[in-house]
Image (cartoon, rainbow, N blue to C red; front, side, top):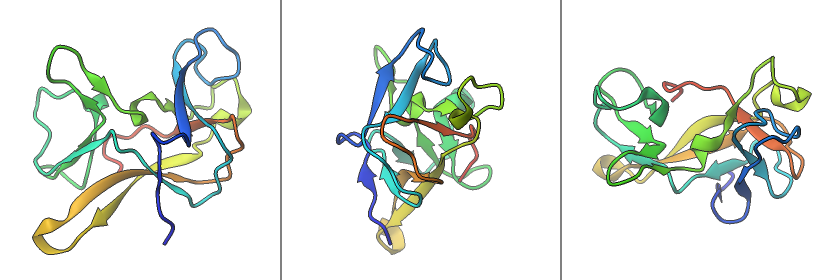
Length: 150
């Protein structure tokens, strides 16, 4: 099995690109590859935390990705506590949409994934992105939004 690449360790970068035409959302922030990524590569996002409980009713559904059905755990992509929220790198992925300006950003090139580490009661769930097709250096990563994707 391929080992994940740590997203925060110079493989990908979140960039503010307001008003630029080389991003699917020229008014927002996107995630671009700092080097070419091959299909099948799994990218570990250390800034996403797993919680084994169900997300609470007051948690914004745009801030987590649920694992399984109701009552199961979730990967939290925005930590809402404290004075100000902390956004993971994954939060800045833009959605693949047919209306996107750039043709390469109309179909998702990554998807949400997870890896289970350990056995028995000490299983840890690690959040990852799986590259669906080759992504050239400098290209934006886009995903299909789905908070119940795993």
